[in-house]
Image 1: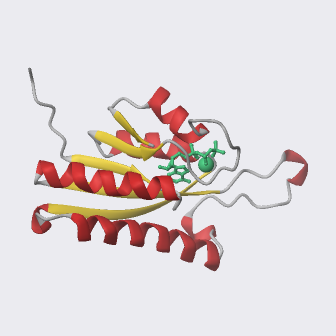
Image 2 (image 1 turned 90 degrees about the horizontal axis):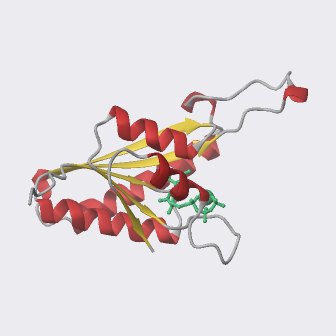
Image 3 (image 1 turned 180 degrees about the horizontal axis):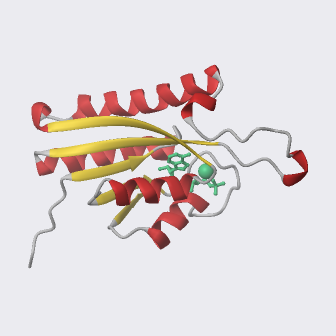
Length: 156
Ligand SMILES: Nc1ncnc2c1ncn2[C@@H]1O[C@H](COP(=O)(O)OP(=O)(O)OP(=O)(O)O)[C@@H](O)[C@H]1O
Ligand SMILES: [Mg+2]
């Protein structure tokens, strides 16, 4: 059987407890591989204003984030990146890149990033910050499983 080559790992995080477990798992995946690039991606969700609010400018790039939104995004990716570095035993061979994206759909941003960066595996949480109790899979992980062209590992 062909052993799949996992060198580029994407771990999308919203800073939730489940995503934190996914970050730890991604660190393990990369570390076992020995030489790997891990991308930590946080997508700041900026919805398009409704048509009746046409005068509201559409915020769509990182420059449009409010200082506190930018700080929160930075903290989320920095903490996750630090965690991966701390957990990797093969330090020089594991590179970690924190990325902040701004998008009206976190799932689309994650899928686009995976395509553009030739990601081999996406490691993510089953749930995130959403508050609807009882459902097993959040809407973002559901869309990634449906839309990704690479394997997706869901951490519970
Ligand atoms: N904005 C985001 N940026 C990066 N990754 C995200 C983002 N939102 C969710 N994720 C990833 O998706 C996983 C599942 O979160 P998801 O949003 O699907 O669940 P939820 O918040 O419980 O439900 P919902 O958002 O549908 O109310 C998270 O653990 C995280 O890995
Ligand atoms: Mg969510």
